[in-house]
Every structure is written in structure tokens, then in C-alpha cells.
Length: 240
Image 1: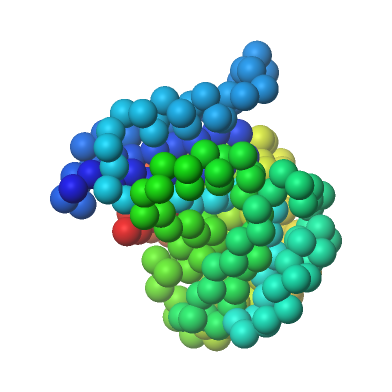
Image 2: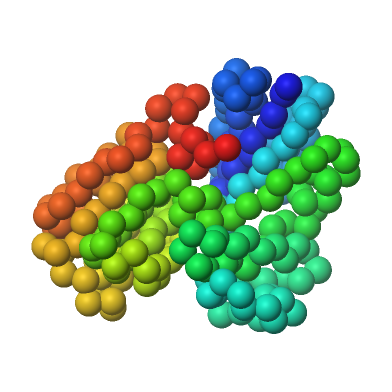
């Protein structure tokens, strides 16, 4: 049984091909300044043509989202809620919903309609999810003040927890240590988390973002790298 896993980030697409739950191949494609307008669809077309897949899993880390309590049912407001965080185009984006019962929250997020249609046209069983919900499902939280950071290529997402409750989630473009530190430290000040009392946990592309982590260590007391970017293992924390 061949399964395809796709991860969409702000400037690229990553994929894994799994056979009997073991990763047999993986690739990453990131947009450059000279990349064509249809870069994403071209790369996706090449990936989809590789095999006759039995199942596809799609994870979006695109930062068009909003976080709501579980049970919020006014789905027609999804686009309007996302628009408070990022510009949306209803004609070009598909509105999606991911629910996390573990922490009692849900995410409205959008996904490029052209890409959504490209995948759905294959008529292969496909599961869509938002990276924040996937991240929540794969982390362990204790009764403390905690920040959990998942690092990508030029991007990060993070959760703030207090007594196992989600206080805040954000998904950000980061291209410099200054950006990264500003977002994290600004968040701490806004939610009144002290640097000494807060536990930090870092996951994802830690090798690529080693300088970010080194800078963060200068300002925080308790930091642990939980899950490194081990080849053929880490794909949004190796979730199924």
C-alpha cells in the first residue's frame, strides 16, 4: 500500500511516500525569486504522477487560519474570522475546519482552491488537516507554563499553554533571528509568561534553524529540543 503525505508551507511543498508505514522516499521543493508563478502546481503535478497512491494525507502550514473553541458552529463566519489575521480571497481559497478534542479547540483555515481541486480530481481517499491541529496531537503538555515551537523552512508555529490549556497559537514567517526572537519574546510579554518560569520545547527543522535556537537560549532558562529533523522520520512530528 502506497501512501502520499504532503506538507504545504508558505514557500514550498514537502512530500513523503510511505509503503506499509515506512518512508521509502521524501523530497522538498522551495520557491525561489526566479520560480514561475505556477511553481506549486507544477511540483505537485510531478509528485502526484510518481505513483498510484492508495491514500493521500495533506497538511497545511499556510498561515491563513483562526483558532476558536471547540463547538463553535457558525461556519459561515470562517472566512471573516480568518480575515482578522490574514487577507483572504474567497474565490481562490477553500475554507477548511480541523477540530482538536484533546485540547478543546478548532481551527478554521484556508487552502488554495486550485491545489485542492488538483488533489481531489484524482478521486483518491484524501485527508486534509491543519499543521496546528496535527502539532497539538503529537505533543505532551504538563501543568506548567509552556511554549512549544515547531520550526519549518523560514517559518514557525508555536503554542502557549498554562495548566494544560491553550492560551495562544500563532504561525509566522521568519527569515531572521531578530524576527524569531521578537515574535517569541513579544508573545511572552503579552501573556505575562516569565522567561524563568516558562518551559520551552522545540521541534522540527532544528538543524536548519540552529542559530534561532542559539539566540533564544540567551534569553530563556529552560529549553529542550524534543524532536529533531531526522531524515525519513519527522514530518510534522512523524504523525500518521
